[in-house]
Amino acid sequence: MIEKLNKKDINQIMNIWLKENKSTHYYIPEEYWDNHFEDVKKEILKAKIYVYKEKEEICGFIGLSSTYIAGIFVKKENQSMGIGSKLIEYCKSKYPELMLKVYVKNKRAVAFYERKEFKIIEEEIDEETNEKEYVMIWKK
Figure 1 (cartoon, rainbow, N blue to C red):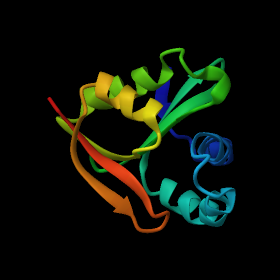
Figure 2: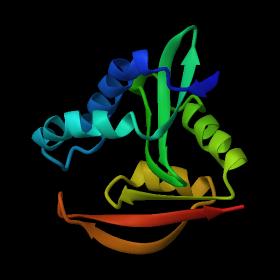
Figure 3: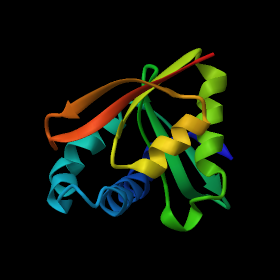
Figure 4: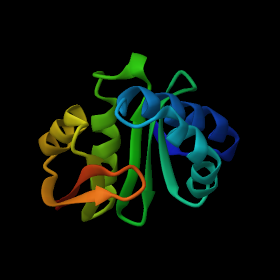
């Protein structure tokens, strides 16, 4: 089931955010994520967050700022079960266009977004991490 974030669940989604960022982005020092934790927590409360729940447990979430997907995270044990796809499709049903940035080295995520009909429109460098990233867009 997909629903809007209940603010009481902020710590649960932040734990998913931290754990999955550290696990997925092995090429970025873990301290980077630790150092950004509190800032991201503040920003998440300003964003539109949709969570995917099963039996009242949050398995994943997607965060948007307007039509920009700031992130999509699914717990490791719930990955490859269609949750990310359901979150993307839910957002596609609400917005005529979506944009995101994804690290080039995150090949699994790049392939996922390409399967979801996102197109690479630009390659740039994330100034904070010095990593290459793609700007991707989907239009209805």
